[in-house]
Length: 143
Image 1 (cartoon, one colour):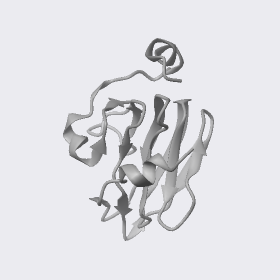
Image 2: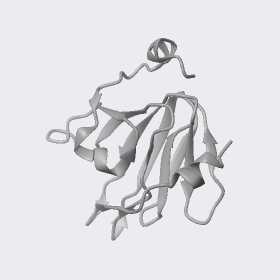
Image 3: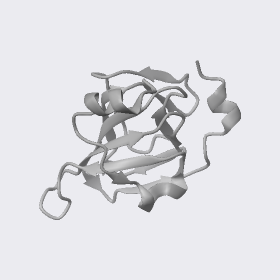
């Protein structure tokens, strides 16, 4: 899905604005479209869109209780990988449940735009830790 115009028709939750606040933790361009207002809703959801080849750094959603993240894949194709495990190919309709305190990354395939709804699971003492980038060498081995 490298055609942006075709992808835009599939991306039902919208591209949103450039994800400038977190750009330092991404290789490539990503976009963020909040679906809930963090000031009025206890559950934050956002549609995150990755251009082809874009991925976020390894990261951990820390929590003492609860916490973690849920990804609902909505358009295009992407990757998800937990530390020490094989990467998982992502397509629309797939759901990834990420427990708290698990190092992982996610992003688009090289030749596809990709969107997922990211849900921050509520918990006690939650915080994100951004780690090292997914290297080009690691990423380019994915097929």
